[in-house]
Amino acid sequence: MPYDDLRSFLQTLEKEGQLLRIADEVMPEPDIAAAANAAPRLGAAAPALYFDNVKGFTNARIAMNVHGSWANHALALGMDKNSGPKDQVDEFIRRWANFPVKPVYRDNPPWAQNTVEGDEINIFDVLPLIRLNDGDGGFYIDKAAVVSKDPDDPTSTDKQNVGIYRIQVKGRRKLALQPVPMHDIAQHLRKAEERGEDLPIAITLGNDPVISIVASTPMEYDQNEYELAGALRGEPAPIARSPKNNLPVPWGSEIVIEGVIEGRKREIEGPFGEFTGHYSGGRNMTVIRIDKISYRTDPVFEHLYLGMPWTEIDYLMAANTCVPLYTQLKKDFPEVQAVNATYTHGLVVIVSTKKRYGGFAKAVGMRVLTTPHGLGYAATVIVVDEEVDPFNLPQVMWALSTKMNPAGDLVVVPKLPVLGLAPQATTPGIVDKLIIDATTPVAPDTRGNYGNQVLDLPEMGEWLTKLQSLAAR
Image 1: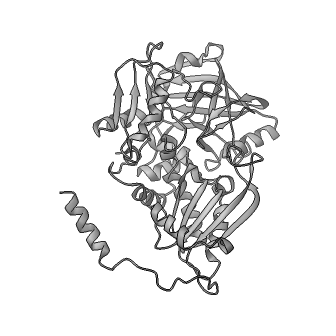
Image 2: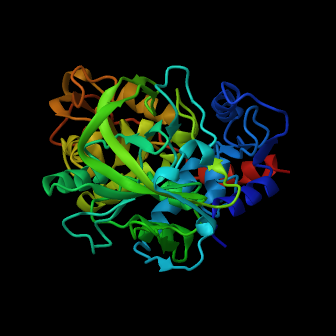
């Protein structure tokens, strides 16, 4: 059965040995963030962390690293916790084929148990806020699913958006949000400001694990995240209407914050230690006025540590970055075999493909750069042959070592868009992008001497299965 809320998933994690309760009293800073920074270093089966004895807080419940390992990510999808990354990507692709599965509205959401409105709002009374990294400009909410609608087509369920964006706490009822231009919420805000309007939003915290996955999936503008959640869950995702802005929000959230992004209003936000593993500086960003907070009794505050990989963000944005790119490429180039975009949300993308003719691999690389996600993220594309597993880095390095000739296999495309947070850009938002063709040349490209490649023995697969069975005894 899929999980309808965060708490039921935490129970499963604990049952599976994937939740570590920290009973000792901890300092809010730096202990909680430092523990979440350390947890993924425990490996592919690193546990989630749960803190409920935080110095200075009387009733804090903080969950960290919930998606922070391949084991936890597998359990979020209802898979065996020993499933590896490639198996999880393959299963994600299989379930994506069932998209869309429409959500269902459900009554009596748990987040409706308590409410506070207007001038009575003090977000510090609801959330046990902490800084994540020493250089952060303040407290951040960084694992919330933000819901908005297209102001020009508000009845469209396809053009609504559920996305994860960094949110800085600026005051009792004031927040700042960074809408990256490539993201759907930025388009919603632009349309609202062109109409001279504020943009109503709902910020949902402590969501069921699949909602967090789909909210960080780079879907197309007219694709509904709740309908993808249903496909991943194997049954419709439960949602409810937010009481103030009438927006569709996850039924099982711990906290729902409603308000508006105030049109044409900007204030300095940042710096913040981002998913790139670097701080982004202060910038003029949007301002949110909080109008209503609804929350579950004794809410669990789910937080997300970001830093130098791998941290939880890298697991959260791994499989769900690969799959949209794979489906888009496969539509245009059936020869594509697999896509690995697990690194820093796809700033590097590795594609394995068969080839029709000389130069074909470079065309596949160009297509990566023009996908909706590739436009803003893919800075380097590595293309390898079909027998090279893009998830097997030694094989990828072999392809780079033996197939790539810098004289003809490096294609630099100047001055393409990239998200402003990309630290390699000299001018924020613009970067030269690189395609590396590490495939075997085929006619009429006749460079090199590749006629004598060593291939796997036909019996290798059978023996691999046998050896795995013997090793497991």
